[in-house]
Image (tube, rainbow, N blue to C red; front, side, top):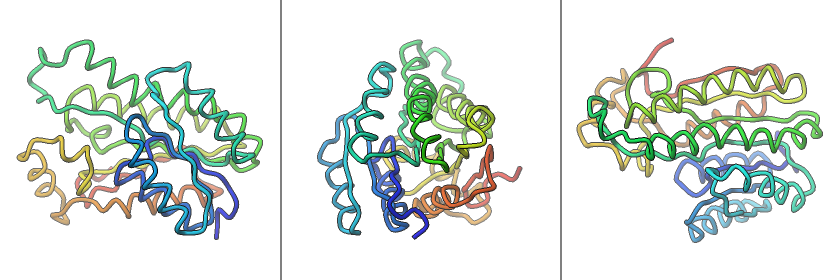
Length: 249
């Protein structure tokens, strides 16, 4: 159990991917904290999955667009468990707006996307950094998107926010070395997630067709890569796209 008795905080732990990550890390021995915005029942369900694996679980409500709310939330997790070793930045928001429809992408949507998808992960990392450094082998894994690597996705704002997460990963890897490693997973289309459900049907079909494996991505494959980054002592600043062969770089 590579993460035995370590503590992982998963920002955005109520969805299909968040639960899969919680399960993977708990199976490796970690105790799990998750944040949620409004879905308290879903948060309890994710915690129940962790508890069923014999690990401790705890949830904390957090609107990560509110930068002032982030340090108290991270501090509460560290106090509750007595430590914090891993941060997974999985929380995100999107809304489908076709790229050519520039007028529909108004300032309010743009600001909410960037506040949730890019500013939030930075301030979570900043708040977690002292605890991760104190652990001696801290880990941050950011969840970006294939849309951050190529000009596709639910909107221009979503794609550029995820591109920002990718470069944020590299910058934090420099800033937090050598005590903390920072890596990023960039999934393609994932079956069953709330993000995917917001896509236009033709977009989802097109994503499957463009992938050389002709299918969408399993959330368990993404969760396993998060675990791999948590286990590794010699990898930092890296981005791995898991996309069924949609993009090679």
